[in-house]
Length: 275
Image (cartoon, rainbow, N blue to C red):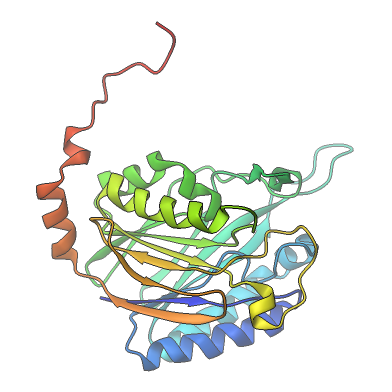
């Protein structure tokens, strides 16, 4: 299976961002990709009001579905969907959602771990998801994760334990000292501790794409990665928009789990509580 990671930089306007999805899906299809993954917040970049985007998401998602069907590829893209109604006196929140759509695929995943870290509080405007999501296409089982989820190995191990060959990680990784190194290290670590491919597709650096971004929003640093089940970085982007394309070998996953059986060897009888 051929996977493409489309590292783009999105802005405020969902329709302008939809045009980027169309353009980069066409590029991926021309490169022979069976699936193309876009970053978190492709529908609307962070730093802008998310509620209006969530209110129109299904019309936007239908356009993404039509793009996927036209090009004959599965498209995985970050968007926002309506959350639960606001409690009395509170503000309505949205869900940070991945949409996966294309030939024989139509699923969604709501981000489980919200980014309340490094001075940003995603939970003010976003409510967490409640379920782990995987899907199958062309004999490949694929897990879904979003950005901050990459810091939580148990999600990736859960995907692998249920037969996932790879996990897709769309992101809008906030910049800061050491953040690119952390991103790279976490992608490699998640591949190693779950013996699967990790395709980590982030928003590019806005300045590298000539985009003016809202101040202090997690708008991306680039450096999308495709990592093998044994931790080898197969492809890495720079700061600017870029398309990564790699062939995924499911036999390599089986071989990695044979020679590095961390899933089989894991102790599940240990208490993490106090002695």
